[in-house]
Length: 179
Image (cartoon, rainbow, N blue to C red; front, side, top):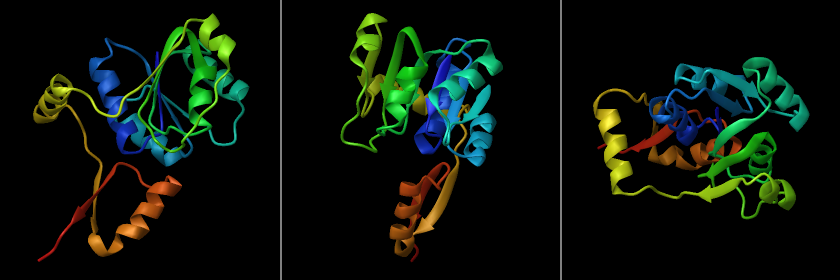
């Protein structure tokens, strides 16, 4: 079972790739708003959990109610915050993997014993390799990947960057230049 945190541009793609390339894995979206969970389900998530203001125990209970398991095998963290990465580890089962692609914080803190004692793996990825890019473009070319794109004007870029920072943007913003 794969969890994806942060259902913005990266998270929306992460859900789709997990469904397409995950060998039949159940995908659980973890987000802080119901509208982002709606997008996640549209993009293939089997379940969605709104984690806003919830304790780890409450999230684990909801996960278990939905899936029969209180833990995940892997988490793709598209937030990279001081809250999201420890939450990912709290939800991770033994020998699980957290892959972090988000960059919201400079530092995160995780408990050392559960990390080592349950043989977990933590990795970061800023960009894939050429083969990954070819695979992603092939999926898009075949129409297997949905895109949530909103066009914005250059003069509105600061307002839109602030919206991204607040987590108000679902999908991707693309700056368009008019003649």
